[in-house]
Length: 103
Image 1: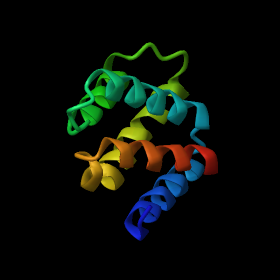
Image 2: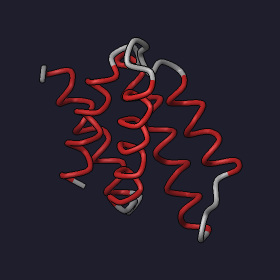
Image 3: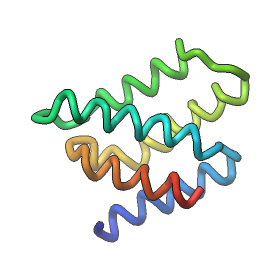
């Protein structure tokens, strides 16, 4: 991973910790991206990631108000930190994977 990758990890972790987002929320997103990659191996995740996160915020089956807040934070920081990587699905997986471990 490059310095730019690690900066994205650091940014995501800082926001997740300050918002007290639980790592399992990130794990669910990483699992979805892996599933998506396995079905669309020739396509980059692109804007689909942000559309998926927006659907989770708007229509997701949230078990609590805090879960909705977590997902809103994840969407916000993903747009800020992953925008440069949206055409590189493996980088997105690596960045979110490391962020999950460090939250």
